[in-house]
Image (cartoon, rainbow, N blue to C red; front, side, top):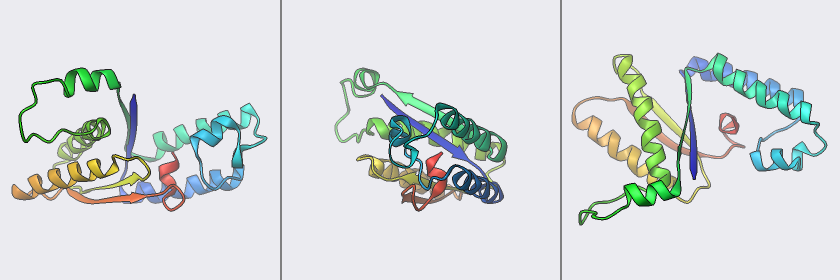
Length: 173
């Protein structure tokens, strides 16, 4: 199963979000949140009590809820991807998305609906966490959608950037 989360906000919201996230990092004494280390109570999270961990997760949730426009999560089970999306017949020369890419299309669809609701006056810049083997598929999908919108003179898709949690703290949440 692929699970993908997305959060969206305006420049001002991200500035406020980053300041508050930095305060959480200082308060709890961690630099980079990695879920696997956190769940194992390893690395920076070694010795953390269950209460301290629960407080951080609650604070992350509150941080998104109170400071950004929206957060969303999508998931796609592998058997559904294979039995429904990739099931024959598949037209020749049709390029299919990876399972990761299908999840990204779903997130992107919701984000584009938000922009459309605001009269297409915003531009969406996407920052993706690197590391997954199909991040390139998501970039291809983004660039294809951007090209399609540019053809109809709608400039709502900006940049697609791949970053690390260490260089882009909001990716931790």
